[in-house]
Image (tube, rainbow, N blue to C red; front, side, top):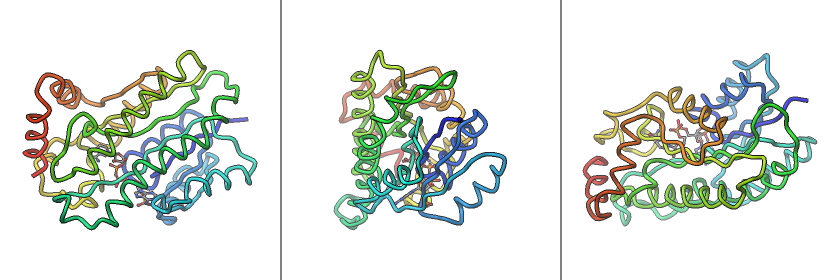
Length: 256
Ligand SMILES: NC(=O)c1ccc[n+]([C@@H]2O[C@H](COP(=O)([O-])OP(=O)(O)OC[C@H]3O[C@@H](n4cnc5c(N)ncnc54)[C@H](OP(=O)(O)O)[C@@H]3O)[C@@H](O)[C@H]2O)c1
C-alpha cells in the first residue's frame, strides 16, 4: 500500500508544486483547499495517481477536526502532512479589518496547529519503508523579523517557525521528520491576494517549483529548517546580525 500525503493549499502556488513532487515520489494524495475547481484540475493532471479531494475553508474554526474526521471515515491514514495553506494581508494593522486578520490567524496558525495535533499520533505510529514520513510546515523568511505593514502575517509565520522547531526537538530520535520551510518572495498569487503587488519584494521572487523542489529535497534529508535560495538564506542570516529594530525597518522598506 502506497503512503499518503495530505497537502493543504494544494490548489495553487507552492502547495500545487509540492503535490506534484509527492505524487512523483510515490505518495497517494489528499488535497485540501477552498477552490474545488482548482483541486479537480490538479487531480486530473495527476490522473495516474490516487488523489482524494477535500474542499475546505481553513478559516472555519472547526475545519481541522472536520478534515481529520473525513480522512478517518474514508479509512485512510496520513503519513505526511504538509501545512502549506496560508495568506498575507498588506496594510497598517489598525486599517486592516479585524475579521480578515482573525481569518488569517485561523488559517496560518490555528488550522496548522490543530491539523498537526490531529495527525501527529497517526504519523508517529505508522511504519514506512523507503520513503520519509512526517510534517512539513510552511512558514516564511518573514518568521525571522517583525514586519511593519504586515504585522500579523509576520507574527503568524514567527509562530509557525518557533512551533515547528520545538516539535522537531520534542520528536528527535523518532523515525519521522518535522520540517519548517521558510520561503522568501515567491511568484504565486500570494502578493495579489495580500494586495502587496506594488512592494519591492516582488522584484526578488523564486518560482514556486524552485521553492517546492528545495523544500521537498530538504524534507527527504530530514532537515529541521529549509530556506530556499541563497538570497533568502542571507536575508535570514543577516537578521541575526542586526538589532531587531533595524530588521523591522528593513522589512518595512521592502514591504512598501
Ligand atoms: N509567495 C510568497 O512570496 C511566500 C513567501 C513565504 C511564504 N509563503 C507561504 O507559502 C504558503 C503557500 O502560499 P503561495 O505562495 O503558494 O500562495 P498561493 O498561490 O496564494 O496559495 C495559497 C494556497 O493556500 C490556500 N488557502 C488560502 N486560504 C485558504 C483557506 N481559507 N482555506 C483553505 N485553503 C486556503 C489556497 O487555496 P484556495 O484559494 O483554493 O483556498 C492556495 O492553494 C503560504 O503559507 C504562504 O504564507 C509564500
